[in-house]
Image 1 (spheres, rainbow, N blue to C red):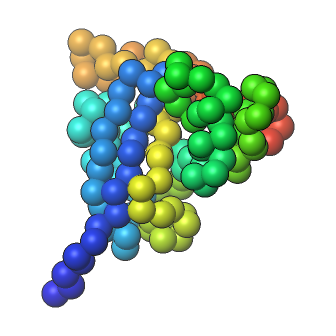
Image 2: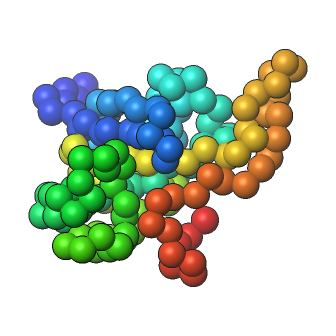
Length: 146
């Protein structure tokens, strides 16, 4: 029997900012279970969802928020378009076979939820379409996996 006193907390947000949830999860847990939990809470089809780690050190997040002004809702990883903005590490696609520790996630980290466009379930309960992924903010060609 193992008791974990301080599970990790993740802020999970959709790329478009319309969906958001906070999840507490064991640091020894698998990413497949985290993905299922997030999809269950947000009523999403796990087959039409990819999770990305999005880590912005406090110094980077503060500088980007100040440069972007009050209308910034999601971090723009790697985006340095506004004057004074700093570049943060680009998000990494999280693979379901890893544990949270293997993926180098940290307590309080933001997880971006990328949905497949046209991936809503139809009346028959099957995924209606297998469209393209919606994409991530600040994405630069040739530098992202997935």
